[in-house]
Image: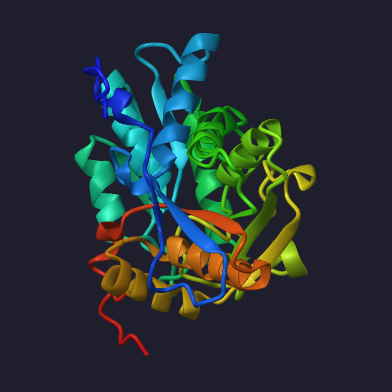
Length: 316
């Protein structure tokens, strides 16, 4: 296999991630289930794709110029990815986050040079009003001047980066994908993948996922959960009803058990949203049967959650 040429910077290592077939966690008689390992991106998350395009599109338009400060509100992975991109490009970066998110993510942002401000969550969980509070504070910072607010929840530049996941999948599965599922926070990943797969005319069924304790999209009410990066407390503006076929609410407890099974049975170390993705993918695989192909993504690496109880809790 030919190797890619040397990159001019670390940004060149984003994308072109591998796909693996699940062998042991999928029950017999089900469709084949594949996972695209997005934790092979530089910061261990598919958010690197989004961060790069948000910054580079703003540069191309002239709305982000040298000497300006980049500002965002994030539970961690977007913040880590933007901190990484800003470090490479030389921008000051200010991020609003919370104690509700993994310490590993907060420390990663700081390691890349980000200035981290925390909004306190009394329960330590993601409540319906936490992320809106973070967004409000990020806007106040941006209003101080000489700032570019990336505004991930409304920024359609994110779709450009995420669409590349779908482009890669169309090449990796030339015979087609029966169903693709993914949990949504900003919703850019699933929408970007859907756009690319629809452009490839694969006829793929697109399934949007959310936590069962906060089923805002499927049932109209938000609640507390602890699946970082998704279930943001409001319907994401980037969510396009024309680009998905179904919404499913998935148990967080099942997702956490699946994370432990993926690690011990498949050798895949991933975070809770990935457990949610795979739980749903197996549901679809049972329904579609052995001739079908179901694909999802490993959103980020489980190394971001080692200080918590995700992998220390009992497996049954």
